[in-house]
Image (cartoon, rainbow over all chains, first blue to last red; front, top):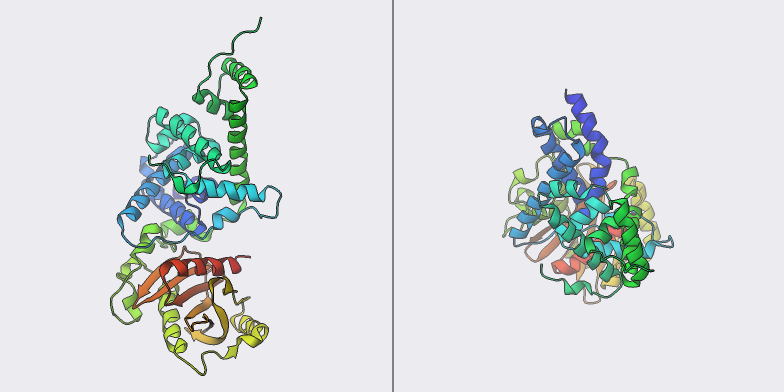
Length: 170
Length: 257
């Protein structure tokens, strides 16, 4: 039933948007990603097994969209779209911790995509390590090592121990 | 007797932070942290990261969901508005051609986007027409800036601001009222001390959809354009893409609040 389908997906949109915003930064791009995810989920609805959670399934679709978009973007020689930074200003900087949060947002953007994705799926979206592994299509051990490397790099960036320009080659 | 704390791995520390460690192991980690200040500091930092991520992004949960993301709208074939990194890149470096359809490599790339498709070419046309004016580049000059923005805001039916671009070396020359599809539009002109000119073209964004920035380049002109809230923007100038990008950021922020 289509209305059921729409309602089930609708329930997940806020958290899909939150994850997308944290993942790509800019509001317009993030919502584009969510849009593509919903479009794909609707067109592949027959592949969803109702005995499985919808949420990880949707996040898996969105992750795949994200990866393929990034790949396409990387192949193109010409300009990158600007980030509108909208995702990073959700909290007014006048708040006491605002400055720190802005730093965190900046450091987060410095992480490699795959580390950022793991950090957010687990730390922000509350997925288990196994669920995150399923969503990203990698072994659990890869999730734990990316999580460890991502968090440590974030910590070092925040502590000023590592400059943003010194991006390590994976 | 005091037992030597059990050796703890990195994986244990993260599982501890994420609250997924079995109770028995948790006690061991706590003992380890009590004896190992460096690791205790790391764990504290990781916890702060988690709290910080929530503080940064949980507000998104409370935002109204844009209408275009409703499953019915998505299924109804309303195409997305924004571009993705790659799509923006596809918006195009065109050789030589005039405006109109010429700005885009493929019309099919941006279906059903009359506003957006027109935006860059309107802005560029207006730029070409008025930046060459020596005596009357603007209708109202910067000495009457307050009057200018009040007038334009009234005519546009939206709050219009003249962004301060002096940080980029551009001083406001003034502005003028224009029209687009029988709707009011406006243009602000800026100038460097060397006489280099840049224009900001603004029109009403009829359905309040938003996009990422898009970029087109043609004959030395660079235009950044985007939809943001109630307005649609294009900033045009003969300055390089990097500089233009910074200018566009500044303008975006001015209209953000």
